[in-house]
Image 1 (cartoon, helix red, strand yellow):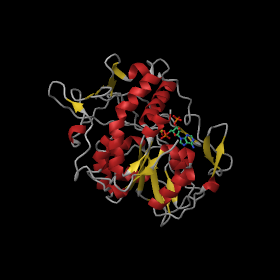
Image 2 (cartoon, rainbow, N blue to C red):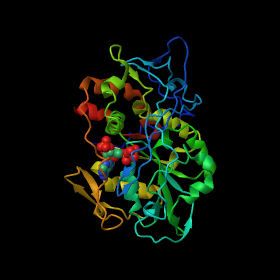
Image 3 (spheres, helix red, strand yellow):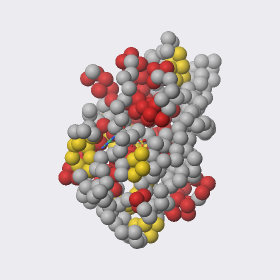
Image 4 (tube, rainbow, N blue to C red):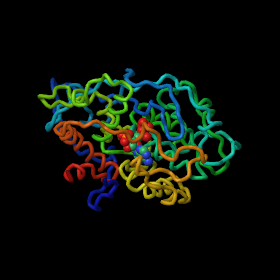
Length: 382
Ligand SMILES: Nc1ncnc2c1ncn2[C@@H]1O[C@H](COP(=O)(O)OS(=O)(=O)O)[C@@H](OP(=O)(O)O)[C@H]1O
């Protein structure tokens, strides 16, 4: 798989507030447009690399109003008839986690290779904000191999579910760091949480943000696979993906599909953060070239490039790159079973329709970020 190719010089990135967006072909139905409501994502399964953590449940409902900002990209119940394959929106079946029984950072959650438990607890200077099923765990664990990074092992969900607990609570779940070390956490649902950009900005406007993005079609299937693993009785992907399969109306209210409309969610972040403060990591390249992506991440964080190809090896049994040196020598070196699940076989016609659905949003996302992740290329390769 390929990813992350820079746009040609003629294809300049733009900021959606200063330049008109490329408009996907949308038409209204009944003259009304509603907003896309952004929901939470994130892995609630909690079975993570070297760390087993439970306490979450998917499928709750927590509607969050989203102010209209993306012009005609804003899709709504009446607005989602996309010209080609068709879509509709948007009442979010949100991922729901009860206030998580957080792993205390003094334990495994402290992360950060072999740094002893001294120093000070600080608020994070960098966050992995998404996307769910993008490869966020792999990225966090890889960056934790850097001696100047310490991270919380579990997802604190502060800016979505635990915000009322306050910044002191948030600080308390962080690992201790020494001067010069970076504190990090990852909660993939932030990317699709409407309030998250404002809240993070009010904590520290110079917070560095990292988003791992992955082909939204594969991401949706991965998301579904995770839900299926916990609730085997759910309908098939093909059934859930459509409001009306005969008419080709994609159900964009399904969180598995909605999360992949990256341009829409990104627009919300760009109201608060400049593009230069957001790093987009290719989930595909994180698998095919983890060291290459990690070089970009370390540069972005202002770190010396210490995590390199020497840290990774490809584990044939797992089918993924794994870290050569885990935090403690007794722990497994690859991510757990909840990462790299076998996906169910999806009807190729449904995949084709989904690709068509996402295409205008992907193109818009490439323009906004100035990076072509080549997800369309993947289709034409087939
Ligand atoms: N090194 C390595 N090992 C295992 N898995 C890897 C790795 N790098 C990326 N990935 C991909 O990460 C996908 C899970 O993404 P996340 O960690 O973001 O999921 S979650 O949102 O935290 O649940 C997971 O998705 P699935 O393959 O669908 O399970 C993997 O494809």
